[in-house]
Image (spheres, rainbow, N blue to C red):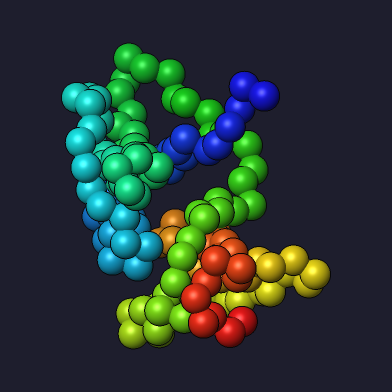
Length: 135
């Protein structure tokens, strides 16, 4: 199969929304700001394990450019995650509201948060790989 994994996703925002989004994805989700090509608009590429997986793009409307249409509906983005017990404590310490959803009949546990633009973010924990983690 030619498709093997999610490479990255891009969140379009305004320049004013960029700092709170960078803060959320670095402080709460613990991604790291990394190298980004010289793109003629503000933004950030956020990395996990050396892979840029979240691209933030602060769109600047210019008079000589047509307005880009807003892309289709996205319900949520899921990150494969590790350390369920520690992540619960981290989110609580950060004051970030979250919801949990064990997946019945599967060794999966989901934790949901929302970023500053309201995008639902899922962290998927594989319980058979979680040492001593009680769902």
